[in-house]
Length: 607
Image (cartoon, rainbow, N blue to C red; front, side):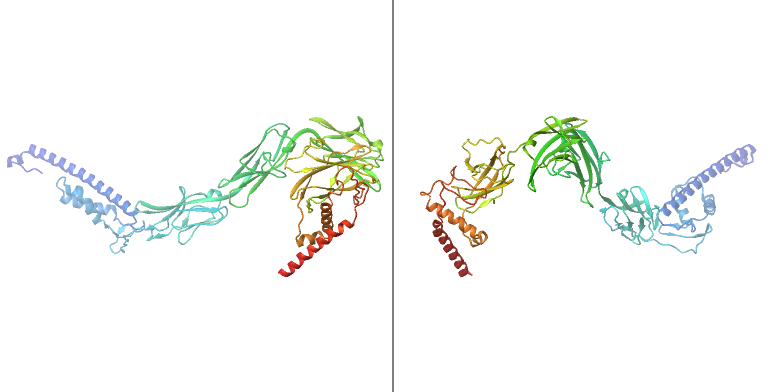
């Protein structure tokens, strides 16, 4: 407030009025400034209160740490009104701190209030200066589906700080309260998170977090749920239908964690690639035929639980394919034959038997029997009038087929019955049987030292190529039986060599086809006591025959050739009409027996 310069000025009404107006304006500006500063102090006090409450330095709402704002404001206003003389830096910068002190707020302590009024006798709460620390490290957990999993989170100096669990960004727990409504989730007393009956959707990142003065500390656990494999055939019904000559791709989809590996196999047989198994999500079948049909299995494995399997049934549609078999039987003195027509077709084909282009029907001697993929013509009491050409005809919606066979009186190919290993030095006794409608009159035998190469197809063997040794064996006394037994001794063989042998037979209707190749190993002489015990007297007699042959080789006629003949029993040998003198056998037999006695006495001495 400005004073009068002179007494006259003070008595001057105009001067006094002007001066009063200036004084009023000054007071108005002072009040505006006071109002602004009061608002600033209140805002500062309110912000400090929120900051300290978030840091845990204030008690809950029922115990306020700041005095009633009106009382605090009135005190501040009085202080300002009595001491304020213009704008002062003290009130701008230092006064807020004084105000906080006056309101009962200091760092590290708080004063309680009751019903909003300041209580100087309220207890003082102190907080430690040691911050909490999470001791458990970050971890990665791998557990199988359905297992129980415990995620640790050990905290040192936790005090009253709030611990939270999160799955990704979703809150699971806060303090000791489980926020997420899931009965499988439980919080242990040590704040470890327990999850029961793991599901695939539980795979995620789990965070254990504590907020310390606005700066959160946390650890993260990565959970991987291992899921056993599952596999689904495509299409879902597991049936793939195609036609002969098409290309087909089989597919299976697998799932699981980790991703499963798919392996393909065929339920019966091997894959078209000539492998027993093959890996991949798909399997390609090119230019399919009836051999590609069947059940294919795709197996999924990932090391968790049991492998999963799915089946795909490949159905190849094709026109009929025919194979014919002949089986001869001798029953109750009668000869019977079965003609089997094996038909492979999809869809199923109609099958008929024909003879001389005439469709056959059942009679007393001709019977039909139908089975899946087979129609059999059974002929009883076969006689020469039944011989001739027969045909099997099959037809379905995709086509038709016809195959012929000849029913004749020719012998069946011989079947070898001797052992595959021979123990004689330079010879081998081979035996066989032959089925024939009429008596066998001659055999033809071919043998050679094996070179390991496959034998030519039956019916295309060149008997005069020089690769084979040929023996013609006439039968002097043909047997009147359906099955005939015969034997022959091959001479001048090499010890320790393998030989290939084939044979065919002849009767009044002609020659049979060549037999299957028979392989024999001429091991040679074995004088071990075990061998002698195993072979018995037969071995001694055979060895004696070899020694006799060697002793009298020059004086005896050839043993291989057309001069040798066999009876049907094959047990008596005839050389140029003269029987072998048994006296020649005595000396070598005695030598062999003496050698055996020496070996046995030596073994007894060693024992």
